[in-house]
Amino acid sequence: MPHLSIRIDFEPSGSVLGPGMAQLLERVAELGSIRQAAASMDMSYRKAWLLIQDMQKTFDGPVVTAEVGGVAGGGTRLTELGTSLLKTYRRIESRAAAAAESDLGTLSAMVKANAAPRRKRKRANKS
Image 1 (tube, rainbow, N blue to C red):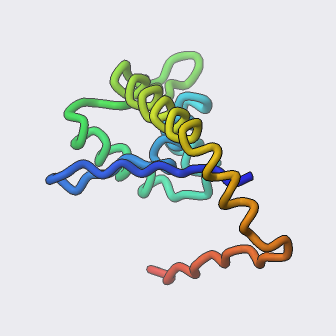
Image 2 (cartoon, helix red, strand yellow):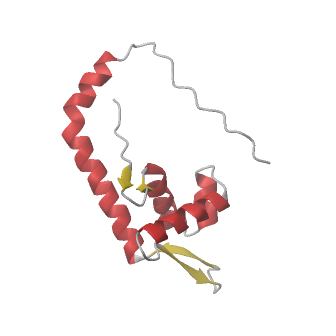
C-alpha cells in the first residue's frame, strides 16, 4: 500500500516543513541529541543543525533546547513549540492520508507487480 508524504510550503517566505524535518524532530525527542538524531537518519550533524535553525527562523522561536552537562551528560529536547509543531504536522499528515485512502488504493492497484523501484539520485560529492 502506498503512503502519502506531505510537504507544507509557507508563502511568501519560501520556508517548508516536510517529512524529513518531522522525522528529525522525532529522533531528537527519542534520542535526546541532535548528533545522534542526525546519525540515525544518515545525515550530517551540520545539515541537521541547519534544518533546526531554519525551523526556528520559520516558526519564530526555539524548537529544541540544549541541556548542558550534569550526571546524564546533558542533551537536547524539544521545546513546547517543537512538540506542538511535530504533533500538528503528524495530525495533518494523518488526516490527509485518511482522506486519500481510497484513491491511494486505486493508484496502488495500477502499479505493475514487477515495477522496478525508483533509483535514488546520486549526490555530488562536495568534499
